[in-house]
Amino acid sequence: MMKKLWGWLAAALGGISRPAYDWPGMDIPLPAERLLHLVGSIHMGTRDMSPLPASLMTLLRDARALVVEADITVGAPLTNQEPVMTPLAERLPPDPLATLRRLCAEYGLDEGALASLPAWHIALMLQARQAEELGLRAAYGIDYQLIQAAREMNIPIIELEGPDEQLDLLRQLPDQGNALLLDTLSHWHTNARLLQTMISWWVHRGPADIAKAFPSTFSGELYQYLMTERNRRWRTALQELPSGVYVVAVGALHLYGDQNLPSLLRQ
Image (cartoon, rainbow, N blue to C red; front, side, top):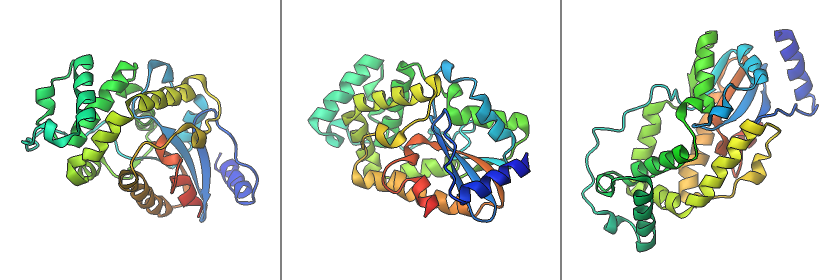
């Protein structure tokens, strides 16, 4: 099997076109006999997204390791945070505040409880609730399923960040992540459509044209912090991997847009 994979790697380096998968993914060959199978993950999924494609499981079985953003089966706790004393009315403009109150009423969220949380935490809770309303569950997320499968196969798991580092990234957002909350509220319906699009890639299968699927929703500064800078750090980490074949599962958003991970790796 390894001989077959290295033969394919040589062909890829020679310019032969890459194979198209029936899930959002692509192959990136690197020098020193390394091959990355990038997988555009969704962190929550529907029951129809399980089990994962047999061909993806074959790639994982033959991989030296599975690389993920973080082992989401061991999440960092979001409790024990200092309560925020500034009222929501002072943190949000009138229109986003009205949207937040409408969503609290629609999804049965306690506005008073949310008011004591930093903005980034409110944004995460809203996004998770939206995904749940669309029928998504963490147990059917692509990276979650890959992690479970890797453990069953005794495949090593490498984290690019880890839950604690991801939590620190959120805590370090300027203004307690107010920009993330504003983007979540402003692009609420757009984000719902994006989730449905990504679900369709895994349920109905077929090569995904990621570049055409996503409009930009993040503000420039937020995109730089949450996407571009992380892609650059991940590129460095992936370029330091020893020789071998790796399945690399990162959020699908990281595979498109300016300074996306595949383009950085190809440079």
